Image (cartoon, rainbow, N blue to C red):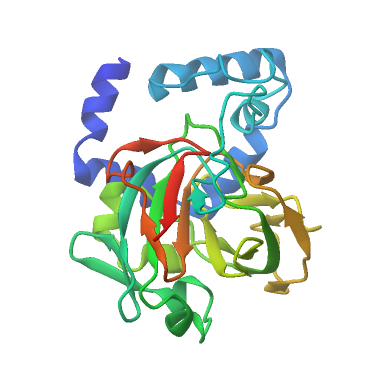
Length: 288
């Protein structure tokens, strides 16, 4: 049955309709409520169904072996040593587990979303007028988190958080099928734009945590308000925090996409390839 359903969902039109042409806000709120039910039967059936369809769900790396709810399983922590962070100060590491999507250099105002489709960096960052100049000739990588992946994200370098912008928006799916059909999707969805300054050279980089359908809730450890469908502002969030490389910054409630933007002077690490997985702590960018 799982194999049959998977084949049906591989059809692009069916996948797009089922995962997008539904009441996205209502569905997201329902899953947010349902996933937190701490009733053993509901919990066990939910996790069993998830395992059946996720295919690659791995819980052997989790810090604990039993969970109070489906949500508790989604936001699981990993046991110590499950991820190794490259300590080279010249390297920006991946903040999360993910599948590498679009990547490249930043020329002008555009980043690649999917083949033949671009979006504007200043729109992505919430109308930041200085973004084009600051990141001209920089690099970017899009990391897509599947539902079965580890959903927490970490500091790519020793850094200070110098600002966070929350952008309230839609909840489109962020799978490749939807990215091909919805222009500037990342600029439409709910997202948190995290500006950080490296300790090593005092240059800035950006982490954009993009929410999606069933996932429109982002928890940041250095912000004292929950960023979800109920939050309505302010959009500029006061924050001042310092992190070592590998320290946990926050997590998605389920999974979505993270875009990392590095300033000029960084090159993409040679091990990073489109459509290939990357783990938190592995090299993403390296100073030339």
